[in-house]
Length: 225
Ligand SMILES: [Cu+2]
Image (tube, rainbow, N blue to C red; front, side):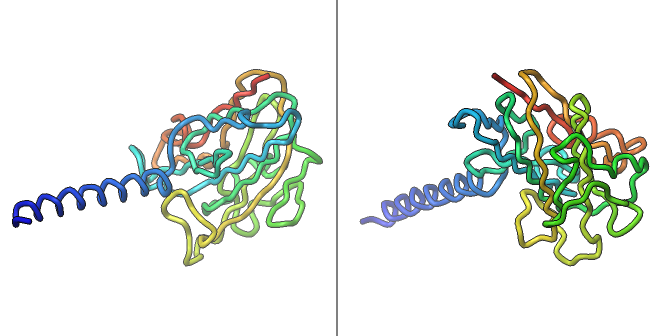
């Protein structure tokens, strides 16, 4: 083969390798956007397992420094998407992996677990019904669906930990708290959910930016029949 022939073969192979690498990173390592649909392939009446994570810094997209929620779709892929489609009148078992640091709450009412099964959350294996955010590491975020009376404090991680996650999606090698709770989905409709901790650092009273833009600190529970 001539030098030019070998060179072009090499360049074609190189392009294929680069394309494969980009595809692999995009598909398997970066969170995707899209709707997290928990109604597909869901046996009727079976509980839905909804796994989300809260991160202090998303580190990609148009606002890389913003706090955010992410959700794991039924195939295990992390999505940067806060509209979650679930079936009506079904038990929703929520697992939150909370990777962010926090502070005392401005409103102590947000430290109370409300509107979920037993009015308890399981925090790293221990049931609690209220969290005193003036103790320990405080609270990073809350998960609330106001129209359903649901409010759950998401306890913060130690801000001095050496393995704080700085890039989403975060994994188990970073310090985190695991919070689980359950609730019954209501009848069909769009139910807004949001975090009530003013965690939009750098915005007026902490309530702008990620607190008021879609896909960061709020979204919709899209309940379908
Ligand atoms: Cu928040």
